[in-house]
Length: 467
Image 1 (cartoon, rainbow, N blue to C red):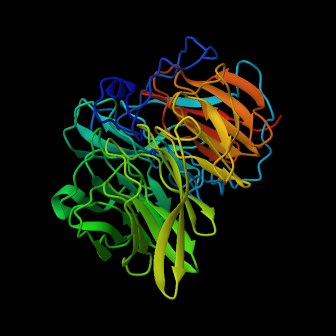
Image 2: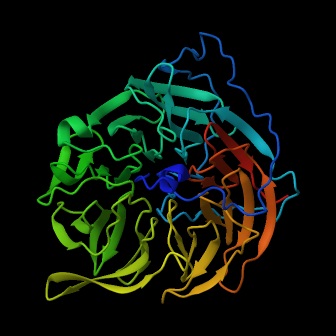
């Protein structure tokens, strides 16, 4: 969910999310990237020519090419921020501890429409929500993980003009289902193997949702056979049956709070499964069982745009962060005698911790994230900064993820750094330019020894395996 720095510079509310992404939005001055930015030229793959019998290349077309080989794999990154929604790879693959200046081997690349929508990976397939400007269609696309060949594409018409990119969200995959949420809040559930439509929902038409500025950045969540979405409008949250598209429950929205760019977080507090959602009016916790509102907190709002997703740090503590001077807040959620309450444990100014765009990562007792101004920092759970990457290592609005105890962090111009995920100090292990840029803001996906990244118009797949 990615948003443009120029908007901030002009004082206009702004929104990769997936970001999704997610994941969404864009927001700090990209002039503060620091001297480590790598300026290099690239020759990425052009769109592959295909015969009409395999995969038509006409704009806006829908097709399925069963002849594309797919190598079955159990390695996955099935939604925004991965299987556990924490941006941490669960794979045991042996990954390279460093790489040469040329970077990890690039397996394939594909052209994409303007946007910051990241990929999801499942069953040896890569899923990407794209936008075809010529045909004015959202296009959910599926590629073979090993080759990058397009297996299927499912398009539907929707007129959208570029507004600092277009697509911003990461599809969610579970079994035979893949669910996407388009820039104008069109939800599509398709067959993950062949792209056949299972159901569609227009959240604006059916729930009165308001499309956020700079388009939707909320990434769909699949949980327990249901798609969980936060439309705002007539229903704060909804749970939709994957098989039928029918709502299992709807959460009332008495305050009229609207959708933000943040995605829904599943969490269990005091033995109660719930969904935490940032709205335009505050943060809410909703019962995963029936959609009942358990608690509300109006102490965390960002008038311009709410983008990072809440982070679960355990013990009923939810970490919230944002841009536009919001900084960060640790929220404590508790249940006493059957009553839910919330309170702020601490707040930080943005120079200590805040996040314009990407969602921070909680890893082994510490929080990692890129703060306004672009430095990567480590924060402890009392709100104290343990280290910062310094002026020489700034990442702008770039994404990051953790695999093999290291942080893969991408800067605005497409330079990928490998940094130790440890609280003692900033340790840079490797750096390489992997994308031409600009605006390399799409959320990363790491499935085993494969890393997928994107900038405004390119998607690449790298081999990050140890040799």
